[in-house]
Amino acid sequence: MPEDLFEAAVNDRLAGQAPLAARLRPQTLAEVVGQGHLLDPGRPLRALIEADRLSSVIFWGPPGTGKTTLARLVAGATSKVFVPMSAVTAGVKDVREAVTEARRQLGEQGRGTILFLDEVHRFNRTQQDALLPSVEDGTLTLIGATTENPYFSVNAPLLSRSTLFRLEPLNAEALTGLVHKALQRERAAAEPDAVSLLVGLVDGDARAALTSLEVALALTDSRLATQVGGASPDRTVTIADVEAARSTRALRYEEDDHYDVVSAFIKSIRGSDADAGLYWLARMLAAGEDARFVARRLVILASEDVGMADPQGLLIADAAARAVELVGLPEAQLNLAQAVVHLALAPKSNTVTTALGAAQADVASLPVGQVPPHLRDAHYAGAARLGHGAAYRYPHDDPSGWVEQAYRPEHLEGRRYYEPSQHGVEGRRAEEWRRRRGG
Image (tube, rainbow, N blue to C red; front, side, top):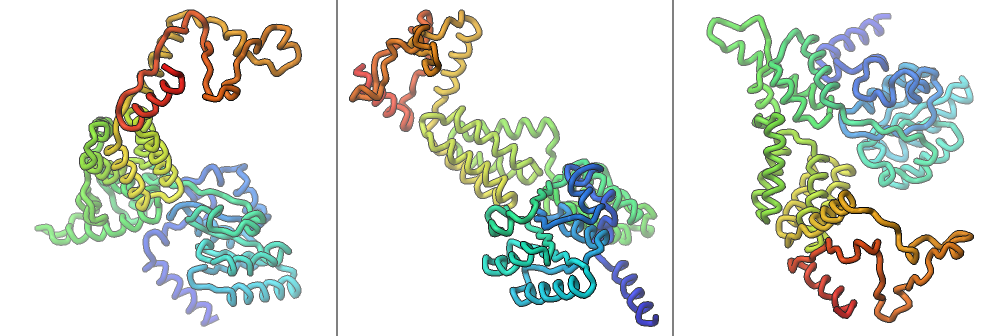
């Protein structure tokens, strides 16, 4: 009993000294925020946890989205032995010892074992292979947590034996609610703009939000204690406190600024000013702009303003967008910057944009006409009797790879939409096209 009392006293002291993020860690599934797609009533993950029927799973998501929290909730709900382990410090020896103990528990007490392996992507292939037989025969139920794409970081056999649950970054509403809950617990308040700034700076990371808030509260207390006349009874976190806590500067970035800054960003790249493009990129990222939005704008610009003058531009922009999804910030800001520089330095052409616009205008204003008979589908029974495909000339049968042939309704044959520019590779490709046609 004295030992139990001592342990309880230690836990109480640790709870009082623990970081704010640890003190606010959810104790029930209902308290978890931002993962409703997994944990709302009736959702599979919640049902599995509440029924204690969870099989091997991989929790994949950015930092601060609740992977470890979910594992702890499983530990509280399960009748199985729960063994936490970090792949950062553990090795094959630790895994084998866990397997041996799991077999003993199963044989002597009939209890299964859940192994929670945090940062599972840190295990190399050999270490992951050591888990496979025990997961496969049911000796261990694995809960792996990773911030890396498991399709690249987890062995395929192990992944195939696990259910993958993807956790999403917390949205602004969820983070705002979490910050207000923390403020209430700490008997403090915050300026609305300070909360908005904090939420915008943490990229969906709940732990980062609470850690930053804890520092901001300490700065608030320090500031109040030095005020003339003594400390105010009201603890109110200001924008300055959040700026100092995050070592950043709050940028005014409201709805009007969002549209104005992105307009300047696009126009700078269109105007081939790489330095200006990088400046506006840095400003958007510093203000908490969604990197996926920036990536989408670059993909559009690659076709709208660079187009056929440098067809590689679209591939570069698409690769940057994929990097944002795969890698995330802050690392993906380098991929965005590379795309900005490439697109700014690329020759420019809007001929694809104008050509599509001209074609769309004809579709909207002129009679649509019928598909010429020789272009109609001739692959089904009876098509030949209807004259479909008759007189169609197959371009590959000609040595030049091109044949003279009508490809539009007759009344539209003379209409021109695409007028190539002489910029970049577009002029050369257009000239080759004309030469193949003999024109």
